[in-house]
Amino acid sequence: MQRKQTNAISVGNVGIGGANPIRVQSMCNTDTRDILSTTAQIRQLADTGCEIVRLAVPDDKAAAALSAIREQSPVPLIADIHFDHRLALAALDAGMDGLRINPGNIGDESKVDAVVRAAQQHGAPIRIGVNGGSLEKDLLKQFGGPTPEAMVESGLRHIRMLEKRGFTDIKISLKTSSVLNTITAYKLMADQIDYPLHIGITEAGTLVRGAVKSAVGLGVLLYEGIGDTLRVSLTHDPVAEIGVAYEILRSLGLRERGPEIISCPTCGRTEIHLIELAEQVEEALRGVDEVFTVAVMGCVVNGPGEAKEADIGIAGGRDLGIIFRKGEVVRKVKGNDNLLPEFMKEIQAFLKERRS
Image 1: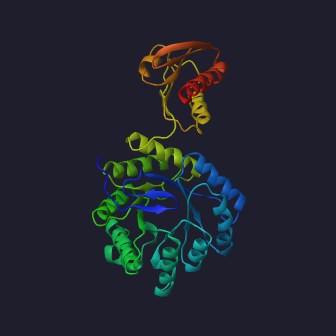
Image 2: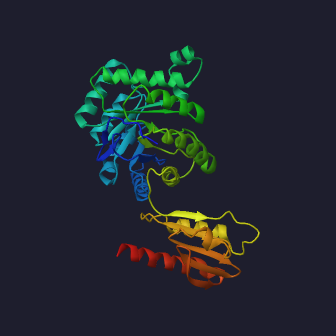
Image 3: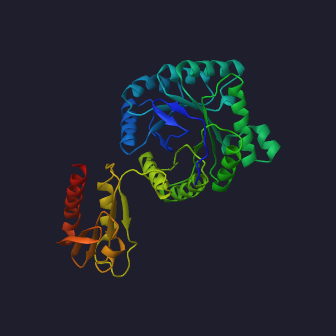
C-alpha cells in the first residue's frame, strides 16, 4: 500500500492528511441541546480512541449549548450544519474546531461569504460533505441519478465555491450507502484533488451489517491508499463505531490501539462457554490502550499451539482452563466460573510487567 499524499490541515490540535495517521472520528447521537448527555458521550468516545467528534446543530438551542460542550470536550469538535448559515457562525463563535457543511445549501453568495470569512478568522477547516441522498437536482438530471460521477461533480462544485473565496482549509467526503458507488466516487475524486479525504459508508446499517459494509468499502479504499480520516457509520451506540474503525485499520497494518483478541469459532470439542468468555474478556479490556494479543480458545488440545504467538491466552477443556503465554503453559484453572476472574488476574499481572 502506498498512501496518496494530501495537503495537511488541522482540526483543533489534530492533524489530518499529509504525514498524519489516519484519524478515527464519530458523531454523537445525543440531543446536542442536552449538554450533560452530549458531553458524557463525547468522553465515552474519547476514552475508546475517538479523535474528533461531530455534533448535529439543527437549531438555535443546539447552537447555544455548543460553548459549554466545547469547554468540557477532551477532543476537537465539528459542527454539522445544514440550510442555516447563522448556525455555522454561532458554532464558530462558540469555539467549535471545524464545520461540516455543503456550501450550496446554506444560502446565497453573501451567506457563503460570511461563513468562509468566519472560518478563516477562527482557523476552522470546512468539510464538504457530499451525500448521495441529497445531491443537487440539476446533477441528478445531468447524470441520471446519484452516480459516482454526479457525487464527484458536486464535490468539485463546492470546492470551487470555497477556492473562489481564497479558502483552502478543506477536507471532503463522498458518501453513499452503496459500497461500490462510494469506492468509485472516492477513486475518481482522489485523482483530481490533493485535499484530505474523509471516508465512510453512510447509512451502512445495524451493527453486523454496517460493520461488514464499512469494512469492505473502507478496506478497499485504504488498501488503495485513499483516506485520511474515517467514520464507521452504524445504527448503534457510536462508541461501537470506534472499535470497528480500529479493527479495520489494524487488519491493514495502518494503526493499532488496544489488545487484539483472537478466538476460535467453536466446534463440537468445545466444553466451556467460549462465546460468553470471549465476549467478557473483550468487554473487560475495552478501556485498555496497550497493544498486545489475547487468545481465547476452546480446545486444550490445539488451543495453545494455534495461538502460540499470542502474548497471553486461555484454552478451555472439561471444567478446566489452561492459561499460557506465547504458547507456554503458565497454570491451570479448574471450574468454569473461575476462568474469567483468574484469566483477568493473569492479564493484569502481564500488563503490570509490561508497564514496569
